[in-house]
Each structure stands twice: as C-alpha cells, then as structure tokens.
Image (cartoon, rainbow, N blue to C red; front, side, top):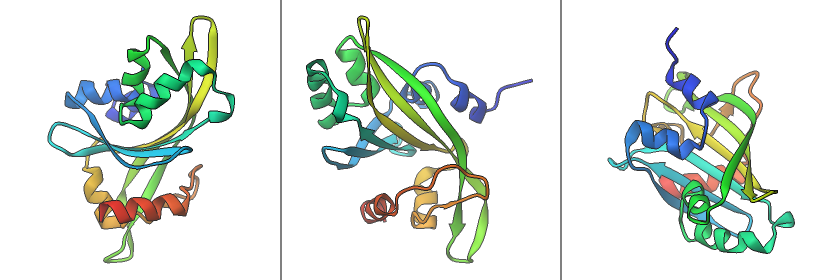
Length: 181
C-alpha cells in the first residue's frame, strides 16, 4: 500500500522542515509574531506559498546557558531545525497529538469538506548527554491545497471537528488574522 502525504507527515523521521524541503525544495520562515514566550511563523516554499503555520511556545523555565545562543538565532528568524544544526545540537521530537481541524466557509456558512492536518510536538535539544525541553510546537499543514487560500476563506476562525483534540487560542487567531487578511 502506498503511503499518502498525510501518512508521511504524521510518521516522518526528522523535522517537519526536512519533510517540506523534500517536497518543495527550499523553505523559508516569515515570522509574523514573536515575543519572549512564543513565535508564530509561516513556512513558505520557493513560490512564496505557505505550506505550514507554525506556532512555537518556548519553555524558558528550564533552559541552560548553552541554549542562549541557539535562542538568539531562533528569535532572529532562523528555522528552529537550522539553528539547532548550526550549533551542533540534536533535535528530538515527541509527538503529543495529531488531529484534523475543519474550517468553516463563512460566505455560505457551510463546512468545507477539506480539513487541515495538524500536530502538537514537544521539541527537545540534545547536547552531548543532556536533554532539555526547548518548547512546544503546533504545526498546521495541508498536503493538497494552499494554506493561504484557506486562511483567507476561513478568516482564521478555526472550528474543531467533533473529535479533535486541539483548539487554538483565540488571541493567536486574532493575531494571525490581522497579519494575513
């Protein structure tokens, strides 16, 4: 049985950035919001099409001094995976939840038949023998249609399906909406 793109996304080894690069060549982040606690970025391909919305919440409570240089690069716009490699560290991912999110079509007030696939991941950094929690990453990805189009059509009012596990903070949605529409 052939793997679907969704199967690859949910079971991939390595980072999501590596997966996107294998599909779309180069991926660059457009950071639309950052503060000391979180960073929200759009991961775009070479045609400037958003392939993923990434919401990262830093876990600053437990960081050692060794992560301060890494953090500076991440805050300055590096993709997390690239910054980790630059500092000769290892990225460890612990998937917590996978779910589908549906978007309403506000023009007709009917649900779209298309869903976004998403995952919540704990990101750990390994340096020599120590492992530190770097933060939580929430990724929203769709393999078939453009994220930008969904965002504009849905006006970022996410509605979870009946059995979905994750509801996005409305403050983040308002922020994304103001940056993208």
